[in-house]
Image 1 (cartoon, rainbow, N blue to C red):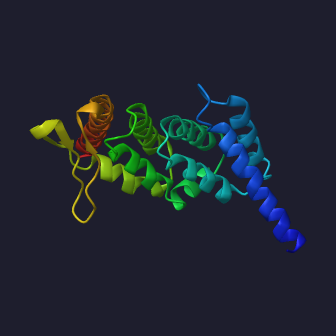
Image 2: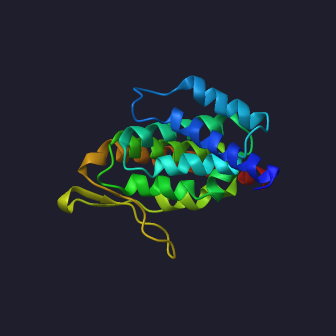
Length: 202
């Protein structure tokens, strides 16, 4: 093995160990010291961002509630504090895994709620076009089907069906509807302002 390959391999192992340390199931809450260390390494270009995001994704898809939750918190901290990391999150299909988590009826309720809140927040704050397909999947149409306490979020034509929330996810549903109505009110206000401006110009 060449020196360069050995260096990359060792670097990947270090990244994976740090992510495991930050998302260990034995923790009661976020390991802020390790999370901050990871963010600092990203900002100083001392880590391969793609490998890091992949390591977080591997922890996210584990069927272990605390590891999933801490992975979401770490991911949230990375996107908030490190420039240009959101596009790498999208490129590595982490958002797809977050939508699957929202859709998982067996997931601990806090985890789908957190994933939903993060996607909604990124939809409002990020300028990346990579978030739009996921926002469309969650917000384009809202249809309730009260049979068996299931709420179904349909999506626009041509897209796969969106998340299905069971009765255990009503808190997440409430958060989603609040965000949806808030965005709708903003759209109406902007449209009314635009029409008023055009009328004054006539």
